[in-house]
Length: 483
Image (cartoon, rainbow, N blue to C red; front, side, top):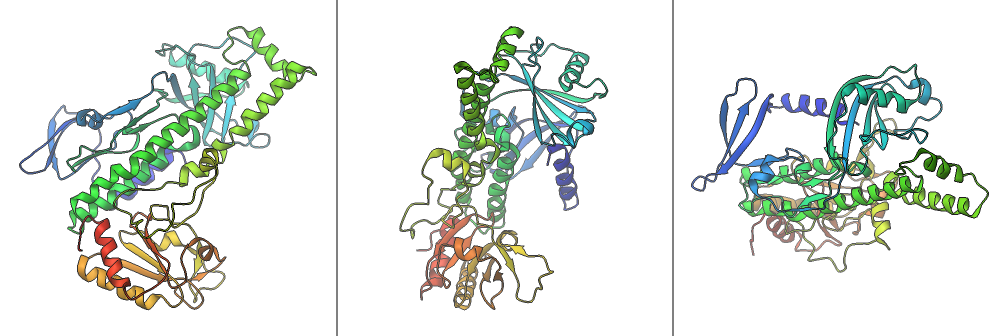
């Protein structure tokens, strides 16, 4: 779902549930009041010019790649120089007759090797927003270009030329320039526990692999429940230290993956002669792809190898989902072995390894309540977990004791813990036996899930100390020590 469609949905839900949205405002600066622990943020109304101060307990800087909060906070960044310029061209262009029958892909690479190309566009990546009438053309500038000087009319004319069909009308909606970044913050907070940065403010990279919005939402999901628990008095402020500890390594990894994929694309386009300044040289290289010659065979082999290697972008579920959260907010002390690992780094990025090892994403499994008919919709383990509370999953023979353990923990800590038993005649049936394969514990054991659907702990078998153990583990996760 493109950002232009997603954001109105998020804004509607937020405003319908008590959040106030301020438009036409710009964040200027902040300072932390040492006496009160409050954050004072200075905001300017861009319509009236009025400056106002917002006093808050926490400040979350999700303010993009030019983050003022990150700058004011003085976060240290690891920044690899050398990224080029790119131009997003958002247009209405009805290309249904070109694509719906012949090439209905999400993303298309547009090249014109038969003519010289302008400095602002060595090649373009066309991604539809609405199939196949609304598009974003991402025009990648030639190396060394530091400024886009072309007029909007020139840019639209080039987009029209890339389409190659004179009958298609191109209507410009918006232009935006951005730089291809390889940059991540070394930490995500001030260390005082009141100001945090997340999203593009702390991990900046090109859109390869589609990791931007997904990772940013995960950042927010990780931080939100922790702030909520602290503000409700259910957790120590030290819980907030786990945000940077868990999310920074993930941000660093996705920045590397996106840029590594970009470098693979660069190799592919170089192989095809895109950087060649002379049109004749470009056409010669392309013609070689069909030549019955040693040079042609070598070119075809290289082309095939790079296209196959880019499967890590098309189907790279591992980099999206093999995210291991490592901090004091997960309990690994009872694990007899390290987390499952693929055979190679490429496999780690390509394949999702479903696991209930603490720190992992809760595996999805389809479930159905015993009373449900085959016509009723199934529910996922993800539907049962989350919702601002901890969750315990167990099986036949385990529910009674784990319910007692959850109640004991709630009595001491005040936290809600939902308990679900999965199995024959239990709360939910394991429809395709997915949970049995993925749970990693015995039927009477349990898997404890945090409010953000991250595995907090797992217990392979039930014993007389279950109640005490659940209380000890959740208290440790929340930053308390009840020993």
